[in-house]
Image (cartoon, rainbow, N blue to C red; front, side, top):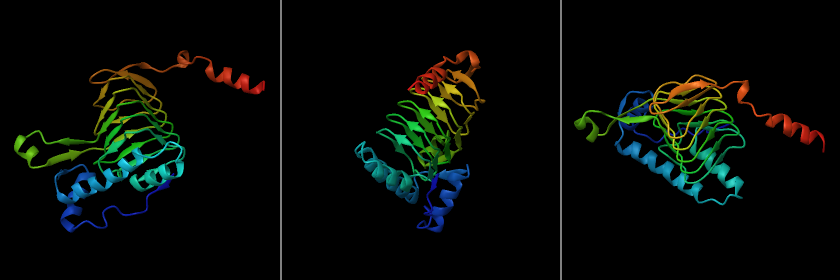
Length: 218
């Protein structure tokens, strides 16, 4: 895991830092504050550059990920067109695969474990606008962390909202909207997502044994 040692808040004014700290701590903050907007623009320059890299330019893709995110593990692959809010609140574990058109609104921390697979068109939305119209148009937002534990698979078009933890090895069915925590080792589907059943030994297909036998015979 490579951590980003640069302090993303180092160039903020006291007022901007106060809004940033409110944002990442789950309090109501001004999403339209000019310094929050500046951090959003910095992230946009990075992810746009990433999305225009060649698949074979592994070193450049890695350099941008290490600059954009809070921390990133080994063997992480992100398809275009990836988009995020500020980037520096995202941690991605090793061997994660993020498919096309993923959006992460990381105004609060988003933590993605190892061997997490994210299908196309998935949204991880940590932030939420104020319900009151006057507050909403004045820029009031509140963000809550998202945690995707090791080995989770998010199906296509899944939406995960702020404050949610999805437990280790669980599978979220395509099109689901996850509004509450999902325990480890289950299949959950629907809007809102609900646990359908546990993942058991009966779900194994014998694939690993077949591949092991094939490789042993070489």
